[in-house]
Length: 257
Image (spheres, rainbow, N blue to C red):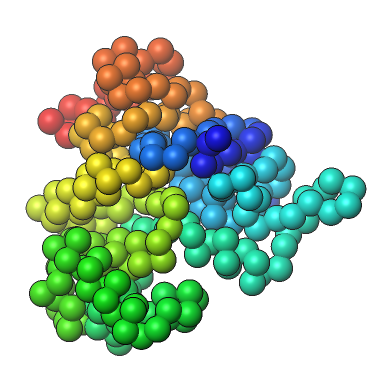
């Protein structure tokens, strides 16, 4: 069974249809990279998966559960109560372009806060989990620092540790390196590579073609709110079938070489 099931999803902002009948399945343990030009619908699709955006039609399931919706007795979808959605969302980690760390909390407190408040973990258990995760992302020595004392790459690695502290079954990454200086990109991508090697299911919106080529199980091209290509990286990058994919790669790959 697929961990993520997206069926005929439509999303509109006013008169603008951003997603036009998107269907996609992601198996447990897969790394899927969403690629495409700005405005193609990648981030909107990512945000719909954990109900940060509502959908206008279709359905999205994670681990065979609708997220943000329930079916009424007539089989129609209705939005469920916030507390139920929050409980489901707690098992879906998300890392944004901006780090969104709490400036007034230390690194350790940033990572341990949600497990205490949401999962009702004891303070000691949350602290141990946080320290283990900070070690995992190479930042245990920064536990008592504040976000402003860290580089952008370090802050993003803390954000990844914070998401992992909730023990998610799925991780969503929305261009996690786009706000970083070029010399800091590698450390974040290396953390993501390790997660992939450990079997974490990941859906990643990225312009980092080397990461998609080396780490992804599938590369997906989006254009104008639709999926136009879905292939293993070796096929996607060497022999894409859709003209728009070919054009996109011709523009972006020389810029990264």
